Image 1 (cartoon, rainbow, N blue to C red):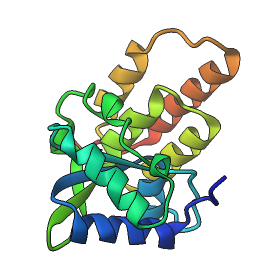
Image 2: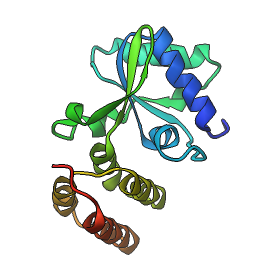
Image 3: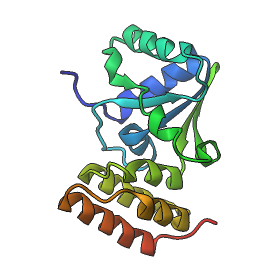
Length: 175
């Protein structure tokens, strides 16, 4: 099993993407939180989404991971399934790193919470707390998305969703 990724390891991957890959990439999840909000945050993998979908990007990302001595599953591009389900996601990005060949983005606060809320594990809820404390979100949009989720399968998830709703009540509006 690979050791968790800390901020330094994540930064080295993001830098390598910017210098060695082409195009535009989106880093989400715990890796984005570590780079943006909480330097002590660890993550088991780095969720990296190619912003174009020709198919060759995934292979290039896996080759990069292999070149860096990482297991290919440690750079996960499957999260694009969740990103692409959010209307207007491309308008919700912030530049994280501009390399000589590629630009790497992170989600803004609104997109990050939208991405975290469906699963909303304890870790996801903590990440949402960090996001909401750091930057304003489009709370109306996020509240509507939260209300549109299917009923929670278990009481703990329902309680976490209620907590997120309370946190949104105190969140600043962007739009």
